[in-house]
Image 1 (cartoon, helix red, strand yellow):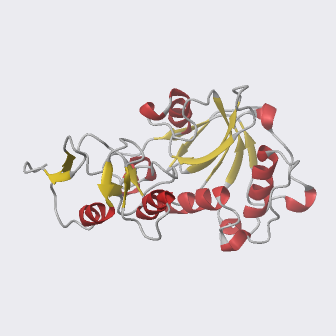
Image 2 (cartoon, rainbow, N blue to C red; image 1 turned 90 degrees about the vertical axis):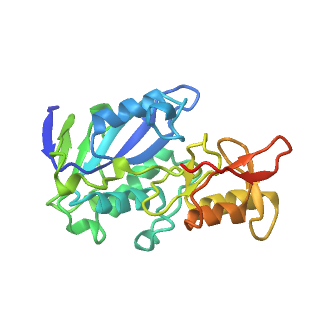
Image 3 (cartoon, helix red, strand yellow; image 1 turned 60 degrees about the vertical axis):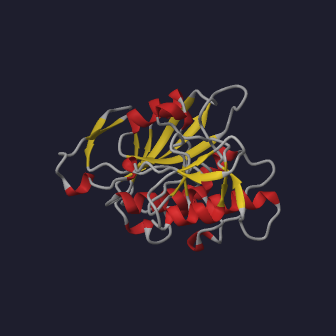
Length: 261
């Protein structure tokens, strides 16, 4: 029977399923402290705070969520491993997705393995099916440890006081990389165009610039505003060498703006 539960100190990693006929069956894995707000953001698009990969592809259903993580960092690490199982040293044993295997089934297969290996098999996690029509039973030899219950129904996260240490620096306040759509936990690369609010990982932007065929980044176009900048200027701003913006003149050359932010 479905039920609604209220959970304090909520950190969850969820699985979305696309019901749009054009993109039917696509999935998305993400992290949230408020699943009810997060699914609304995904379905409203990037401008409303949704992810770039889900924007304009909805509607999406949030079909399941794993919660019970001790903090946001633990949840974010679980999210990354679920998204990139073949890059995680703990999940090297998982066979790659087969041609006939549906993406949704592959996500569940990866999850069944994750819950049985360390460090996650020691956490007091709950596997919650938010949409019972999507629920599947795990294979008998792949069930999670006994201390991890399966639950059904909606969940409400109880917001913590604003002065609580647990609410500071949560992933919901972090920006996502415009290129890879993962959280930028540490220092981020910013565009030199003051009218562009793009943020990326330095490695993601470097690879993006290298699409031009160079061995090392020299210059490239911002993936959002499409303005051209020198890689050296972007790195200088990244390292805090100057606080001024660089504008683009009519000839396409870079020049420094004398007005500080």
